Image 1 (tube, rainbow, N blue to C red):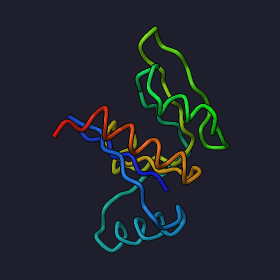
Image 2 (image 1 turned 60 degrees about the vertical axis):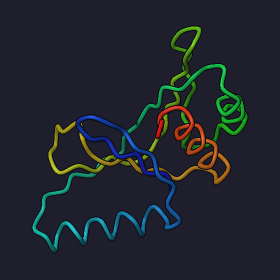
Image 3 (image 1 turned 120 degrees about the vertical axis):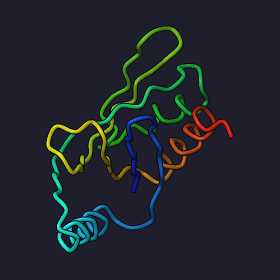
Length: 121
């Protein structure tokens, strides 16, 4: 399972071993027990990546049921659109969590690309 966390100032990406259903059930129970609102809906998320990346080429070959499309933005970048579930504490919030299940190899490629392109430690 792939989890994208959207905060006010950054996006982070994590691969999780548990299933999407298990993770959502745990999240809902946690929110109920802590009396915190939770909003869940089917949604899409986009990740802007370099067009000339080896990872992008490999991902295009793996396009599956939850990788909806690849949209070329300009000569330097491609937008990868994923289908999944959006979870947040406020209905119209732009911060929250997006989760999806895609092939393991696609998760691995996305994680490696994200770390290489966006995590400059």
